[in-house]
Image 1 (cartoon, rainbow, N blue to C red):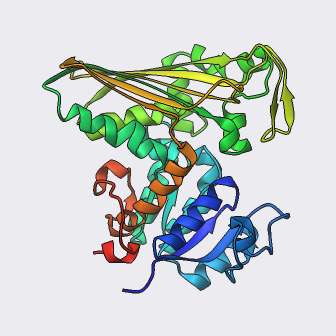
Image 2: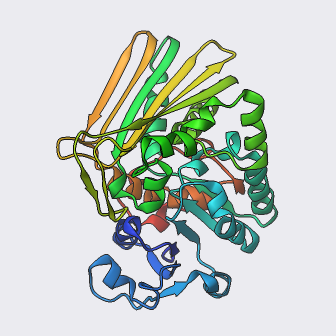
Length: 357
């Protein structure tokens, strides 16, 4: 088989890894797109920190022209965190019949936070016989890993999880989505105020495509779908995280003052008709010098099982997951498909094209 041909959409921090991993897994980058004038025209090798690859970054304004000409097997989108911010690139891929996978956290399971746009993308992808999906760190460490533990449990009453990560590692869009750099008053107005809405008000935002969920909102929906659970209610509570000293943020380009929000903790509680409660927390913030990533999940029931992952390399794990998923995306049924409807994620010791069906 010929190499899998990939277009990289977004050439920021994450793409340094996704592009290198694509090459090292026997596929190739045939095009790259970005909005930043500082990188447009650069060879992607310069961005990756290696020899020139003969592929220059093109402006997103020419995305349709480039994608139509190249007809890649799959597009990797590593830009924004909310589905509404990715409507243009994902709808473009769906309209052109191009498979796409994105690190957009909401896209992991956006049917419970932006159903109108999700269905719109799905209908167009089905019509044009391509697959769109969201994946990344959560695919395994908030998803498959927990469902595997559940599979070895006799009875389950509750699933409880917590994961922390440094927003500095992911770029400004993610940091701002977590309220990093806001005063506590600004955080309450812009982020926490959503938690005080009634169910009817929140449902109106969701159905209108203007709801801004925490990442675990979508993760809980994915887990419920994977485990065959029927969601009856779901709520979230966002709390600002602070640090007792000033912290420099290179991503935000500012000093986060002591007592201001370095980020947030978001706790999502999901109740199901089967009686199982899913309670998950994500903590995303600008880290102090003594803080590190941690991922901990407990499946409660008979028996109780806890798994803890200390200091996971979340950026590298996110990007490796994306690249290892490429054959699954190409092989999957058409539509805007959550990864729990695809094959189980696998390590790829051989060239990616050998896994195509």
